[in-house]
Length: 279
Image 1: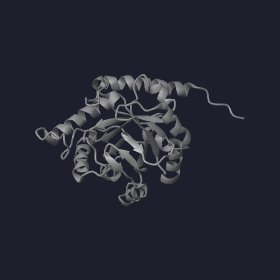
Image 2 (image 1 turned 90 degrees about the vertical axis):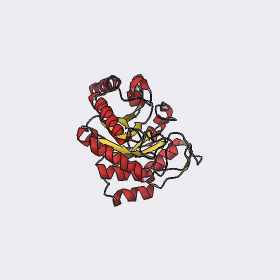
Image 3 (image 1 turned 30 degrees about the vertical axis):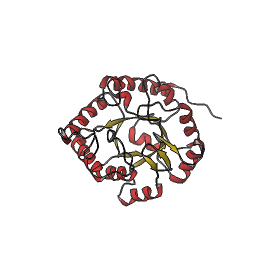
Image 4 (image 1 turned 180 degrees about the vertical axis):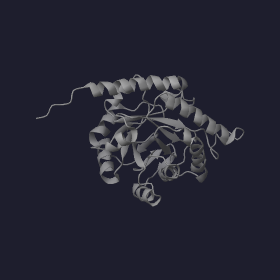
């Protein structure tokens, strides 16, 4: 857990999703407004998230739907432009996520100075995007080759909109992923962005992850934050920070501040608890 404290400086860190609009090449790309609007919207959302008190941001091409498991070069290139333009406004640790392409995410992090990535690095899945294969050995070697060994890798062990092809239970998947792939953290998701993460799945991953941190990846809200942070070591939050809690909307500073107030109160309650007595 040491790297969490070193990077984020708090217990139970909250990583806010900074969702970028559809990019050049994406089906929903707005050619009339172009890249300028994407950059301006990203800067606006960044301000709302940071002003609301988040601990980090994860910059993602969330509106590149439907996603590719091997992205076209223009996607990461466009994201690099956005990060470059807003870079001087970023005051918290930040990560990069090129959905759903682990190699492109590592490349983007290396090029832009991002501290972490979140992706699907292990497993074979039947998904809404077709058969989804991975090669964690290649990803690990690619990270070294592009001088990104300092970039932390957050592995999604319960990916959205997928089913594991092999008949394996979640406890076994977690233990073997930790042993074979050496993730820096694991994240546990619901069905889609904004969908609640199942607490029993979260508990199973946490119980079998050893010293590897475990994050809630989708669906945390004001009313579930304490319950889920009692299990997990942190959370990735996107939809709950949007206006009216709607995925497609922009970030809402008040909603950010309201959820972060709950998180900070919970952290304070943990710090106030007496240390366990051993003897």
